Image (cartoon, rainbow, N blue to C red):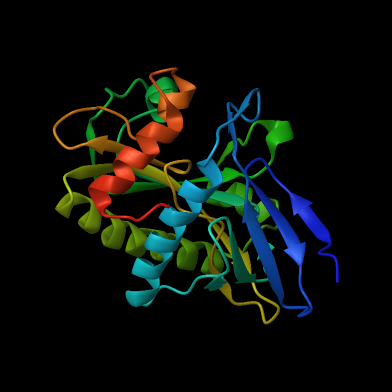
Length: 237
């Protein structure tokens, strides 16, 4: 049976399986920035991002966080529960960087206490605008209870990953999460967690080991990702 493509995004392809509640997700070698305005392809990028996602999702599942992952198939693909993605990009910020500095004039690297959790509409055509809770309600994206649950999950995820990265000498600056609804309406963590979706700095510096290397033309993207993988002890073959 030939796999049927259900959806193709900037960095992944989603295929149907012989089970209606499961999909196969394949990681591409493509890199994009600024909502797809900048585009390139890098050998091994898909393989590297899957390795990060496998590591972080396993770490989160061990901590009791429910995710869409069922199993890992090979170096660039995984099997996952089929979910309907909640059209919210959930951004957790431990330190000021990127758009937060541009919007509000915060000094880059300023520590944010308490941790800041923001919501953005997942819509490239509108340039992913920031949302307040009232916007989410008017757009009928999620109930107040669901938004509170998503925020609680995002902050729990932050504690797990930031603690792990800190032990490796890496600062988790900020990151983006996506959640999805299963067929029985349970909301679980979906998508990926990788240097594509996070900002990672070498501790004590602002040296990027994430997609800012590509956004800001600061070096070779995959080499930076592999350097981070080596620091974390990830095997990428």
